[in-house]
Length: 323
Ligand SMILES: C[S@@+](CC[C@H](N)C(=O)[O-])C[C@H]1O[C@@H](n2cnc3c(N)ncnc32)[C@H](O)[C@@H]1O
Ligand code: SF4
Ligand code: SF4
Image 1 (tube, protein in one colour):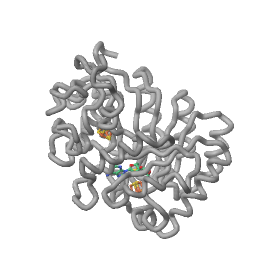
Image 2 (tube, rainbow, N blue to C red):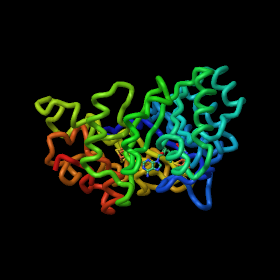
Image 3 (spheres, helix red, strand yellow):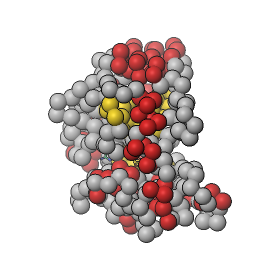
């Protein structure tokens, strides 16, 4: 790795754009869906094997709809990486996959997306009965001791449900994820996001997922962590993580859809080292407003939210309540 280039801690692979559901504002599903082949994924893993990867996250579309999902997870497991599977929970994992995970002791965790109680959830994903199917699949995975978590994407419409979310899921960890959109009816205000973060801070078992602004509540202003320009946390897009999509485009994060290059033309490592976009994200002096903020090293705002709202990935996070 070239001096100064950070390690790629987390590689996110969108393995297919196919999906059986129709969640509003989803960035992953496409009308004419494409998928990566097992061969593509094998090449990617070979070409990135010295980049410091620890976690490989599989997303989409719905990754469990990929015809070679068992082979893909088995391949990633053979590299010794932690596999993280994001699923909508409505597709029952094939028995061959469960057998393989257990037999080869693949280090896997599964996150299941939930949007509210039964009626809200089914209406959001556009499929009656899906909430109950999610509960059945959660039970199935729990019974074979596969680590699970719930992801709750918080919108203006559903965020009040967070307070009663733990009831149906008992002891499962719950991660709250800000819905990234530019729709006044769904987009959280700064105040609503702050209310959610305050609630999470007071309640164990619930965490914020990929929420740089939450860190500003955890870190003491006087801490030495706030001095200088070294990134210590917050938005990991391009800093510790990159995403490959089925068109072989490299993005800083699945939600930040600006291409940094295509691996059909340029090797992944070269894109990771040389992309102007990725290099801009690695220096928080470049981020408007954050550059003068005490919390820049632990936050940096959500770059995807800034980009969707303004078309500028270095703009202020529209939900930043500090400035
Ligand atoms: C794109 S989905 C793909 C994996 C799987 N189909 C699922 O639904 O979990 C991955 C995660 O992104 C979330 N997501 C989709 N659109 C989003 C958006 N605009 N903002 C924030 N999260 C979003 C989903 O709720 C899900 O938790
Ligand atoms: S299930 Fe996942 S991929 Fe499918 S539409 Fe919903 S968020 Fe998007
Ligand atoms: S752009 Fe937003 S969603 Fe993507 S890594 Fe940064 S904080 Fe997370």
